[in-house]
Image (cartoon, rainbow, N blue to C red; front, side, top):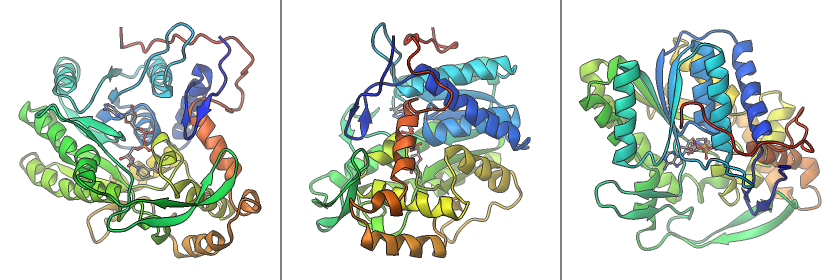
Amino acid sequence: MIIEPRTRGFICLTSHPSGCEENVKNQIEYIKSKGKIEGAKKVLVIGSSTGFGLASRITSAFGSDAATIGVFFDKPGTEGRPGSPGFYNTAAFEKEAHAAGLYAKSINGDAFSNEIKEEVINLIKEDLGQIDLVIYSLASPVRTHPVSGKRFKSVLKPIGGEFSNKTVDFHTGKVSEISIKPAEGEDIENTVTVMGGEDWKMWMDALKAENLLSEGATTVAYSYIGPSLTEAVYRKGTIGAAKDHLEATAFTISDDLKSIGGKAYVSVNKALVTQASSAIPVIPLYISLLFKVMKEKGIHEGCIEQIQRLYSERLYGGDIALDDKGRIRIDDWEMREDVQSEIAELWKTATSENLSEIGDLEGYSNDFFNLFGFKVEGVDYNADVNEVVKVPSIS
Ligand code: NAD
């Protein structure tokens, strides 16, 4: 079929298999171009199909020749109906990994559930024996708790008071004022239950109990901080409460892993256009200004550049450089004083009329469509493409 983008707000309902494949190939080429990394050889990535998780899987496989198991939650394409990008990305990743002689298997299902944890455990027992590195990169709006069976929803709200600021509709470039009502009822607890560290710890407990973690095994989860401009809705909002919990959980997991000489880290990454971040009000305007400033300074990075730097310089580069709260800071260039002061000035003047000039609205929009395999260079979008694509390891 011919597949075109069909958007509804910050969601794109279609995705393009060839565009997704090209994106994955481009990321692989980037990693190969940067040379080998003396990293982990057996890697489990939870949330492996898009964004930072996909970049981590690619970096492990093509930077360190690692065997990878990926867990994700995506829809395969069916006749006449394209699947979600993570499915096409995973199909392309496995194809490339297998061609390069690398072990790569994937499990599509709810990582929060006991069933999927069990499936992964059995696969590790059968195929890899033990795991050296666990990347935890889930971003989900909902979680069904495996013990109570209750379904929790996360929300993106400020805490303590209404928050008003500018935002942009990145499809039209219209800058407007947005007000977000504060968290109420169980909003905070629910968001912490979905995006906090409980599930990460459950994964690590389950792997350790089955003796599936190698001596010195490491686990890394991803977090975000961001500037004061977005603080009310992000770091001091409901999602920030979840990130506080995730970051605190790293210490608990590190204690648990002491007996095998293992360690848990949180890496604070840069703000990027992913399916998760497009959904947060105010963030798209911030990102479009951030991209403009960072591109002008020659320090812009995407997911793959971020993770390549995380692995090569911090995790396996000899200088992990933790901050005063014990976190890895790969958002260091985003948070540079010169970058942030320029954004703060631009923010004051940003309007619908000048945003395409003072911000990188085009870059934002392109990145958004790229997530779904659209507007990718070298792809013929007029060509007929098969929407039903198989992930080799998934029958
Ligand atoms: P993303 O939406 O691109 O990827 C999320 C991944 O999780 C996908 O592979 C998806 O299939 C998987 N997933 C979601 N629900 C699942 C479930 N129930 N079971 C199994 N898999 C599931 O997200 P992202 O932006 O790459 O975010 C990953 C992490 O990085 C998050 O913790 C996020 O907070 C953090 N982070 C994001 C940014 C940013 O700007 N995007 C910045 C810093 C940190």
